[in-house]
Length: 183
Length: 193
Image (cartoon, rainbow over all chains, first blue to last red; front, side):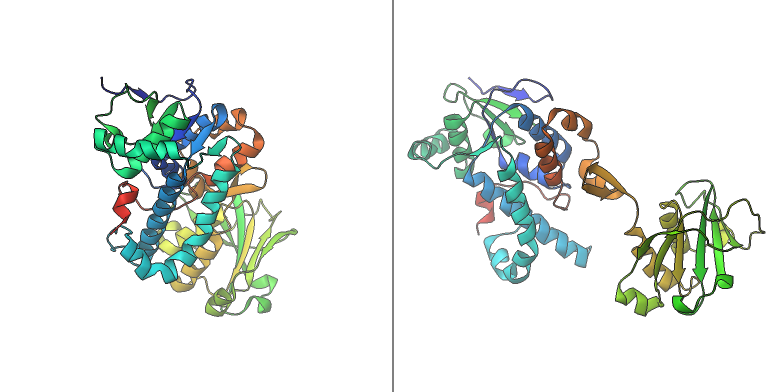
């Protein structure tokens, strides 16, 4: 049985706690993202009515995305014709001497904002969800980070909020007692 | 109708006299440069100084620009023949006028209003001073920033439903990173080489 996706609507009752995928957080923080409005609205609504859970892998992905946007924003402010570039580890190391000092205040701000929300709880890194990851990866052909998101979400939450349906297509809700919401 | 006085001479502000001042009268109350008419009138600024903004030393060096003074109570009701209209205004002049329109009452001193390069410098300095929209007490943003970060989002809904401290944090984080468009999402693994 294919997984049931719910289309999020503001004000609708959401089963709590909610695991919020990193792409929703990233769109909330970064104004230029296509789903900035939708994700900000959804996150705000969740902050009102739910407990939100977040994992260290979400933090890591948010930091990468913020770094990547700042990297490209600075490059384009210096040369508007500069093409967008993925921030790989190699590029980060090559540019870390100027990029990291420039990005540090925003990275700190983003981190402090997440941790300031009283309804946001950082889930612990426990053995059980980690052991679940290889199964989820293999069964559903998921990337490690996506499998980890799902494992943590199903272990600690009742709902999962994401922007990307594609990442989790092919999943069966027989294994996951999780309501997945698309922003 | 808003009244503005513009002091303009090819010398430092400190050497200006009241007799050397000019006044702009900006009509139509719009910031659209295509419909705004701009007339220059002789006049004298008066009233109390409500704000004084000192610009950077580079501005002062570049255009001998001493500062920006915002006055209230500029004399109204006097009529003068126009000596300049919108057709003769160059783009920088219009942007400068737009910046002025964003203020209620303003008196600006600058070294040479006819110099395009100096006007450009002045405009960039004045625009920084445009009125800000207060999102919550103690936190305000410019109109452009408001549109960029909060445009399309019903902040009133969240203001009404969130606890004040949560609302403040939520608003502070929303769109705080100025990103680039068309940078698609990708997972953590893709950052690895």
